[in-house]
Length: 81
Image (cartoon, rainbow, N blue to C red):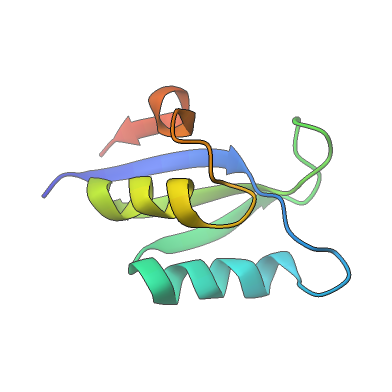
């Protein structure tokens, strides 16, 4: 299966979560890797994160995870390799 990288701004509940905890949960739930690119991203100040893994898993994470539930998100922000 093809490996992809997605770079997106990640929304999270600032009163209940940290970006690191959200990334760890996404990694465990979907079997992908994640890292914070910058804490204040260009899209409204949410952390900008990089997600890497198999295409289907990264797409599912982008569709399912709270704050990243836009089904069209993968179209512009996912890169092969």
